[in-house]
Length: 201
Image 1: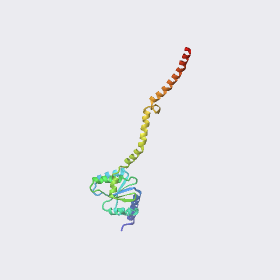
Image 2: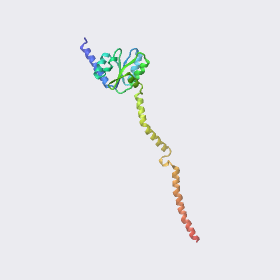
Image 3: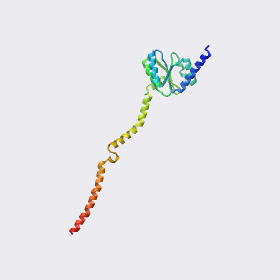
Image 4: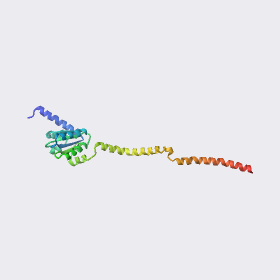
């Protein structure tokens, strides 16, 4: 029979796993059988750089944790070698990295996963794996918001490059300025002609 210390240690691990499951938006369970230390180290590094927590777990302890948080539908795959990858704020990173790794390593496979507290199937995990990275998605959204602003800015810059609003139609302005001057000259000439005619009489 396990000692009190061993039981308490297991209970602490289960409690930590349960909190981790509840606090993450996305998680993937994999079988890491067949990968060597070098590949495992490279995988862990990539996951860590994308803020994905990755640990080897005991199936019995993970089953207890999933039971506490309502993810028991994953229990049927919790056998053999098992590792858990979780992300607190990224819905695609774990799926993308692990799916790509599985394609290059025959014995490494994705067993199951969950998202927002619900177990998801392998097809959904595969779909998430094909989505762009968070940075790319944010860049696309930002680009969509900036597009109208950029178009407006280009239009304003074009006006400035042409000399400003006041100089948009210089030909028309010159014609408009010349017309009053010609009218004034014509008005000034008319009395002079009348005076000359009067003197001739």
